[in-house]
Length: 132
Image (cartoon, rainbow, N blue to C red; front, top):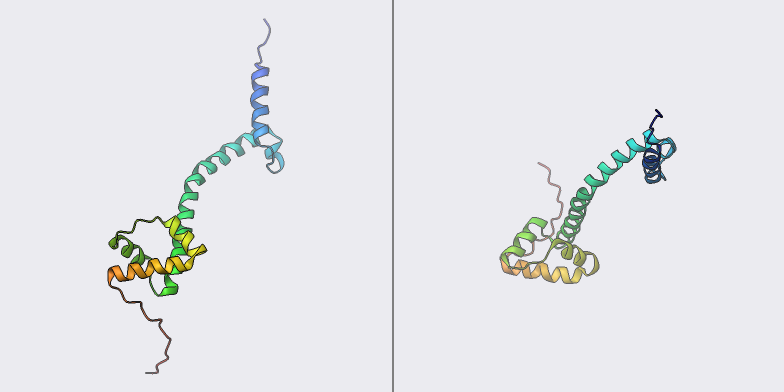
């Protein structure tokens, strides 16, 4: 009886893996075992980082909003709290866009928030050196 090797299917599988690993460094793109390992790891990173990307983008928006608020003498948390108290529903992405592209509009929004919460703009602190 002749020996069955399943050559067609295994060749097809190996070609598919090597084609996916194209562009990787060294033997990761040439040898099947290394390519297979590398692909599994790469796909795991891709799956994880699709979720991490969302977190990083949100933290970037928050940093931009915070920087714009600090210029006026307000903290990010007080600004967001003021938006909620003033019943202004605008997401952080749009706030960050305002901070970058039209800071004048964001400053008007900050004034609305300050009036709604009855906050007075905090004066800029000056550093004084006192000797005891």
